Length: 374
Image 1: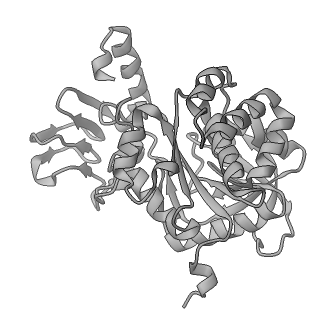
Image 2: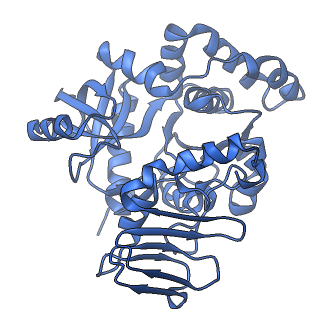
């Protein structure tokens, strides 16, 4: 039986959930107004966002989960998460990429809770299995973060994927309570298949899932050194967040913030200076980046995948097909690995092999002026 310490909330941990992005490779299911994190893509009855918060609440505890999202989605987020209070949803006026989102959360948490607060950032739209292993991984990451490191979670690769970035692990960190933690020697963008296979053969590489655990004061200290104007802008906004000047500070400061991912702003330069650690994550993980990955996630024993009513789907000589139903019957005949997505105002027909190209359809409809489809 796990100890009370292993199941109770982690002291000083505040989980931050950046909930942004349009999920264009899952169009027309995912739209700008209702992106993938608001959707139930697993058939569980819970959206990806709700499932994320379900995982994090036992680790951080009530009142210690913060969602950062766009103003356009703030009402839907609050509706899906009644367990969060109004102060637990930070609404951005416009997208400024992950560094601004996570940095805002860090600065607000520092204002509210002081220098000991540990921030754990976990994307709203990932699917994770093995909750106990996930929890143990987060606890180890928090111990490394308390020692002053920016900590990421390296996902054990199931194959030489070209869809993910990679983390290269170095020597053991040597931090008590984090026996699996290692120094990060570097990050690599999405490689080609041959390079990915070479990485995995070394035993030092894992997938970069974009999870970060770090003391808020440490994160903001690195940001002040790397991008002082962005740091100063976020601190200015955060100092006014819980007061009457919030809207004014957002209006005059938010549009001036540098638009950059946290990987480029913090993780890469700080890793080069020896300040980043990685904790291995042995839990199941998927970022559901396109309909091919959704198909793999939902596949039955025959390799077919259905999201919706299976009784409304007919397959004839169409093995491996992915069907997302919108209420009508769907028949797939003689098209192996087909992808058919039926929604009230748009139908997508492609194949698993072309799943990464769906974003092109969104771009093409935008060029035609069909904003109503996006």
